[in-house]
Image 1 (tube, helix red, strand yellow):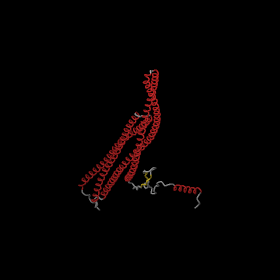
Image 2 (image 1 turned 90 degrees about the vertical axis):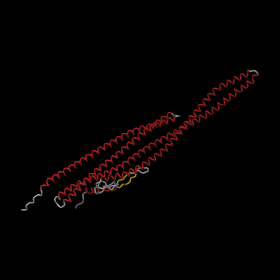
Image 3 (image 1 turned 60 degrees about the vertical axis):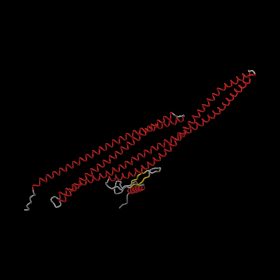
Image 4 (image 1 turned 180 degrees about the horizontal axis):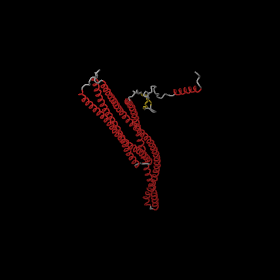
Length: 452
């Protein structure tokens, strides 16, 4: 043999490079060399755990038998029950954690609201005291001129009075001077009080502003916790639905598997009857005729029994399917009612927030109440949309269940009509055979052939 050409060498080298590149890559569920469709592969299920981060893959082996589609579905449904149960447990744990965080957040928010309210009341009280002190100062300032005039009048009267009246007028001058001095002292005291109250009002306003800032921060955190709780609740509700659906699918898969087996048994029984008839035709007027006839009767009885079993299994599947549909309809109605009740609660909360805004004591309190009203109205709008969607979904699920039930009833009616037609045909053939047998009964045996 001659040496390979240059093109052939490069072809071999290229094939080796490609082979090495393929073998160095990570294997991704390679099919077995027997030519299967992937039944022997290892399925990986992503199950959430009670830790942060992405789900952790867990290998689940499915030893699937060949040609048993309904049995495979039953096995998959059983696996889905385990997955749904794990998902429900995880969602329930997250919901409980979110609920606990929400409770703590509610307590902090309520504490900050009370603290801000107390600070506002303090500011309002100090402002009223300051106003009262300023009014008292104005009153004292207004009386100061009158006292000074009275004192000057008393002094003038004393200067103009006779010696007999000076004693009384001197007492009047002293009294007027004393009243003026008392007024001066009261003005000094009230000035000090006004300064002190002004400082207290300033400090109280600073404290009120700080309390409202803390309340705003706590309110935002509370809103975030409420959103997280809502998300966790929705996730838990979805997990509950998936748990319910997986169990229903398991029941349906088992019932469908039994129906498929009974259908196969009915087809096999029909073939057995055909084979028994062929055997009886072969054994006609022979030593095995009696046994062949008995075998045919047994095959017919088995055919009738398997037909009844198939009908019963079909009815069982319909019953289970109706129960599954009823469960889904009830669940959709429950979720729709839950969303409607949520909108009602949010409306009540919005009304309470509006009343609180009207009764607010300070501008900061009004701002806080206004932000609360805006937040509640946004949540209310979202909740109303979700409620409308939930009601529409409930009606859709209800309609789909009704249509599914009607379609299955129609299909079963058609199958039953086919079976009845086949039975009538069988009875007619049996009657025709009996008639032919009676007609041939009086003819006697066929004459023997002459061997000559």
